[in-house]
Image (cartoon, rainbow, N blue to C red; front, side):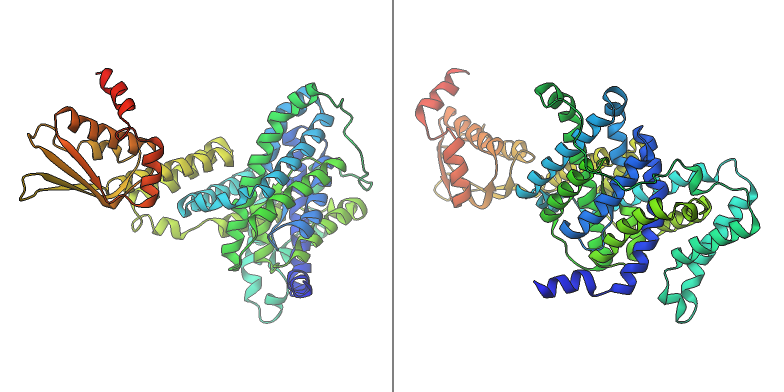
Length: 495
């Protein structure tokens, strides 16, 4: 226990502290922007980001991952806030947390194993594109100073690490933000700053219970939104955890992460914040800046609160161009450039899944829809591929009867091919169907077996089935009818 705490919290103190500061600075404009998207006061997003980051540092399943208010979640809140107001959003946030905790206890985090690598790659690339696109408004219809600041910021981010000793000791994004802020203040540049994004809160958050009636009508209103928020939040968090696992070459507890996200959202709702989830952009910033442990996540949330409440005068001076440079670095670092090279190497089906996931996510700005489409396509391609590996060979024995040898997996995708592989027109007294090398998976495959046996019997051919493995026999005995005379008579009567 003590070893785990030491490893998660105190194994990388300097790196976690500096990375947490960088993340906190990057969280501010996004939290404000997401609040505006959701149609609520900026303090709702800022309080949520502070609370979720601090709580998830203790209860989350992935050290070093950043969770806060996100755009994907904000988009789902728009209609609820517009039609019913902030109090119903807070109630929906609490219910979202309850659903996510239940998902953790039901071990739904384990479902991530069904998400293929091509879907994850498509998700990553789409998110990188969305992060870059989100910076474009800050680079449109602006003076040349903004472009100069952004270019200089990118230069600092990529060149500063090349300096001996100090380049590795201090995260370059932090150097970029500080240097650009000082330059903007000294040169008195008239450019957009964090203070222009919206009004920052000047008080600490307080505990409050949503001011909504506790009845079925309220539940009817918030339930659809809570379900959607819970699903999208967990999906984005699980995908982000998988990506950070790869970046840090470590494993995470996905089911604990589900529970942690739920606890964090309940805490946010009770402090006047909106629902959130893991953020891939900030998580990548954290990892790239040297953050590895829970301390970095805690510092990000705690320092965010200090910034917006006590250091707001300094925070307002940070030029958006500096933060744009950091986010462009994140988008470049997030995009899987190898996936472009691998387009020539990987199978066509893998490329289609990856590209489709990217296109759907970017087109809809909805990560859940994109991942769902990607997983569905991957499943269809897999089923088609496995279905083609099933073959039925036949030979005529010396005693005059024919033996069919079934090899492979028989399920919904291969059931038709299985049924079409038998010659029902051949005049023969006896047929043996050997299933030693076959496996029947579902009711569709069992129905195909019934169809084959009954058609042979209708032609007056005796059918003998041999070689069923235990799993196949279980599903055939449960759903098959070919060896149940009364059921066969019903089927025969229908023809």
